[in-house]
Amino acid sequence: MRASLTRRRRPLLARIACGTGLLAALPAAAGELLFSTEGNRLRRIDVDTIDARPLAEDVLIEANRGEGNGTSSPTGRDVNGMICALPGGSGDFVLGEDTAQPTPPPGWGVFDARGEQIGKRTAPTP
Image 1 (spheres, rainbow, N blue to C red):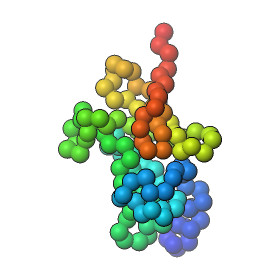
Image 2 (cartoon, helix red, strand yellow; image 1 turned 30 degrees about the horizontal axis):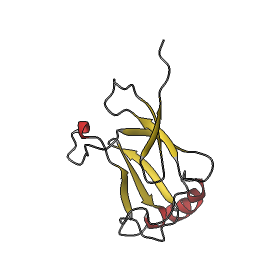
Image 3 (cartoon, rainbow, N blue to C red; image 1 turned 180 degrees about the vertical axis):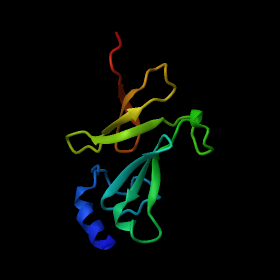
């Protein structure tokens, strides 16, 4: 039952069309990538390895040092929430970003396919 459930769900997985071989942790021929936020980080998982071992995954965006989890980076970003691909096929995407809140205020970070932040949007305050 699990295998058939997995096959039916794969086409429904949210994915971002990123180039192959962006980081050494993922194989150069990585197919569909599943993006997952946890602990203020953004992980990428090669979908074809979910039912196999070893699982091919890496951290595309590391957490900022303020998280205090031992694996953070002073240049990292605190990201969370849903990942939304931007149109155009560039691999750019948007997700929640709240590094060093409340100044600047939490909002949405705009990132390129390499995980570099290229913009930020915040809600206007009265």
